Image (tube, rainbow, N blue to C red; front, side, top):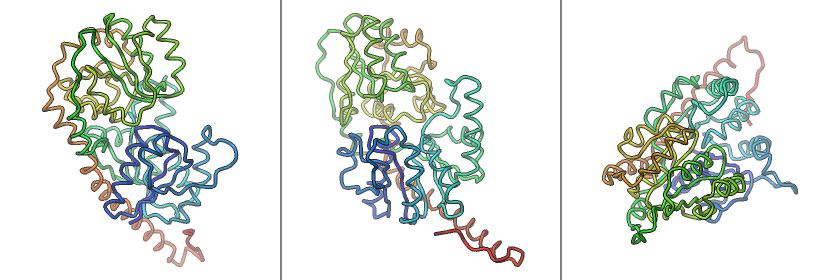
Length: 395
């Protein structure tokens, strides 16, 4: 079975990081797993892309970063015809438009598509009209995509209710954000001796509006002590705006914008408390990494999975998305959080590459069978006398 994964680039992102790890693991297990990349840009090319030898279209002379989705829609069909995969892997919600476009452009020649739902589907952050349009878009996905994967128990109900898949194929596969070896490395990182100069807060993520780092900075300004420090690992288009906000709040000297680093999870253990302020997420990979370290967590309830992920508050302090007052109060008393390290570790070990990779292969096989059944039904219809002289469109 040949599984084709398609990604925009090697730019840092949780969806892309997990997908690249899966492709590498599948290949190590002898699976035929080609990789399509729209462009070769991005820091993860050196970190996770080494030796993966992706299929890439000939790049034009102008930058395609601003139109990478359109570029992929235009170039991926040729790769599908050339590579002839049995299944396409849509690694996250942001790639769903490409998946639907492949079904429309290739018709019956498009292989079955398995899509991982990587973000919250409720999207309470959207205004009313936007949510209505988004719900319609989810229903469209349900008509075209063959198989869906929920990244944690509880999310499958969202898929069934909001996407309403045409096929009843919904798998629950814990997000493979970690490996057993990575958990061991994270557990071995020890906190340096305390300096007695305040608490060390840390956050990791792309500096984009979804992550709502502005909320975090405002809450930190209200709730943190004068000796407390906050380090942000990650980069993105909102960095300049956030730096100006920190300056305007009078906390610029206590905020360190560290930018992109190759392995930010390895730095979590140097700090006291982890913060997450996202408006919406699926199963945040960084939360799993923090659980592996045993550090306390303050996070927004940004996904239907967050309650189960953090034991309904037993493994982390949960606050409503967008509530700066609640976030500030949680920061103010963060040193009172007592983390159950054994329970945190047990939770982290549920979300490993070693567990998820074979489960994905099983789901791909189900998708391929669905595709074969649909193809057989189509051919049977074409053999009927009433169908006339119709030929297959598969190339």
